[in-house]
Length: 293
Image (cartoon, rainbow, N blue to C red; front, side, top):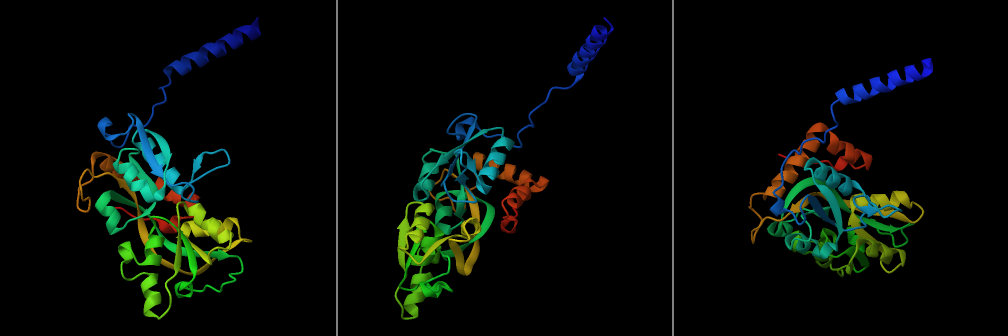
């Protein structure tokens, strides 16, 4: 009887204590996103081109992982929205966001003049371009000029393709023009739909190198040191941006839309409290950190 009385006393005290404890609350959103700005109410649909590790890829269970995924999930949480990732083809990813298939893009997009005409871009990271060869570098590629006249693979719609062909922001000053000015043939650019397809071109010995962003090149060479190595020098770093629709024909000087302002506010709050740098450090990419004005 004493044991029963004691246990009952403990149970009553526990119930009373629980009743007096404040209920757990979800932090208030740092910014509000108008429902009519979203493709789905209460959700933040993020377009991204998977796989592109370590920025976006699927784990063995098919779950989205990576730097961009962590940043996008944190932005969604700070806006009080449920994040949904939309796997997209990089070459048409801007059309996907401007047509309403997703709300924003987080997909290692370098900020270029051409892209800034189509969408507003909020800087969140920076990376250079690198060349990956098979282990041992059998074709002796020690610099960009060693690629003149040789086959090189890169993903469609990327600044890697622009650099190799001398198009976009590299108009007239890309590797093609550099080779021709030196009296050599232009590189044979093999353009693939996915970045992973470009890597497969290298694995199949159809190209001498595969060109991709420096974090991706580093990821593959660290994961598979017996298969790949980085060759040559890193092409100068370029800022990457989170893309949002601007609602105008030319977004170059357009103010941020309501969803763009909300995303920027969430990103700034992440930078202010250290979460942003913590995410970059988790993926060994702290050297790509940027600051917002």
